[in-house]
Length: 331
Image 1 (tube, rainbow, N blue to C red):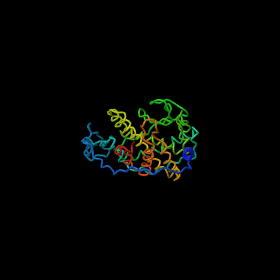
Image 2: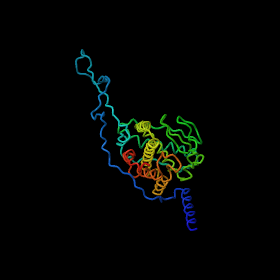
Image 3: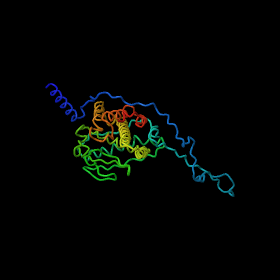
Image 4: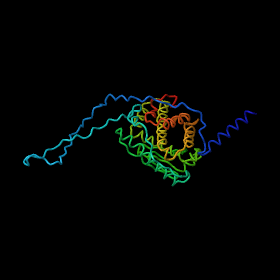
């Protein structure tokens, strides 16, 4: 009898926690956060550390400085070589992206926004999208990465994009489509859910949790423009087992979650994200992931929690290298 009463009490406590808003503090058990020794990034065998010579003819530019030679001689021409092209590493484990280092503190004020207002949430998504551009573009360009921003398609209820319906049937999550570099989202699904999937607003009424998931989708855009998505897809096609493909998917998704944690840390002082709201984010990421009965393609609840905190607490691009992490931390 006592055991039954205790079980009911535990269920009531858990139920109350799920619907509690930003006043919630992080009550999850501490987890071991992965850490890495900075990789040495040995150059690829076919990559030269010397400047790459252009393959075409050099561009000739006529000097605008007056010549002191007699006028009977032709103007002296100056041969100018175009700048050397940077050879990027697009592999999973040693990608050039990992050189990017820390995301700098970025000014991004959210204001008082309701999750349940389409116009307000859409405006916040687009605004913080520009903040993500401001945070990531300089550090990527510094490494020679050809940066470009993603596109957005934000519907009040549902729509159809290049990668299918959004939200997907039975799902409420936003998604990134690499076919046209677009992030798709439904504001009503994000806030209130879709079908049997509850919305983020039913777990945490504070908009920061929802924006962190948009930062996760932005992480997929980073993977796209740095070649990680292409490298992942080649390995996916080469894999001969469902378990192998799922393992690759989990590493891809957990890396995007880690990048999302980096961004939320970068805007914490101006968003603002208080220590209590930070704990709410940590708690939120212990509630998202592969629940029992669902495909194991995004990582366990424990590991989603782990990798979001990895991005927040380490805030270094190479610390989000899930491709070097143990299988237990990417399960």
